[in-house]
Length: 289
Image (cartoon, rainbow, N blue to C red; front, side):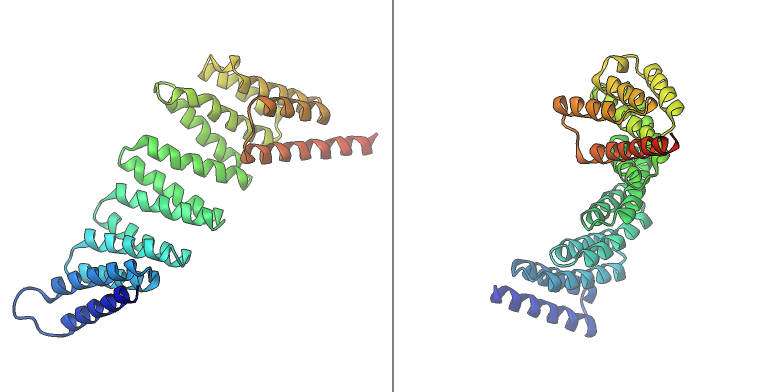
């Protein structure tokens, strides 16, 4: 371990000496880049992540001087993956730099890849607002690269987060759009019922029973097979319970569906919101009587 650190420090020192000195043959920056790369890799072997990250940033700056922007972006990615071991903030900062450079040279697919990685880092850090922004940006870039399936994966994250924040209409729009796109793709059409279920749950959270009923009719028009699924029946039964303001019935419908198809945490959260709203309405009605 100590040997790798010593080598890393020596390579870094030699790189800086190259930059500050004269070079009669070749490019001092090319030589420095080679030495910085050796230094960063030595620090990585020593698991000295912060030092490796800082050297990768120096390497990126050298590549920029050489007008090697693709290599500069990759060096920032290298720095980010080192900082990820010690500092989410440091990792995100370096990935952001990489994204900007990839955007500048028109590598939208690479920029999207690292926007998504930033989104995932913010999600792990429970900064859902920032995570949403980066997943949205990744989706836009992937659409520019005509990578529709990957773009939709990012959009589904945006829909999930939007619903968490109560932006139900935005989530509904995304789920319905992806369901529409998936209908004629053999590998994706079996996921349509799940997207429509998610959209329907968001409609339930909005609390507009007319909108819920209209949506169920629209979903049948969109996919005639949907009305024969457990997902459709689940939404229809929940809508009936809401219309009747029957908390017990609502709870029974949820319990029955969950016994057959385990509800994930996201769906359970939305359903709890609907149930709480239904309880509040029930109490309000009791007070009026």
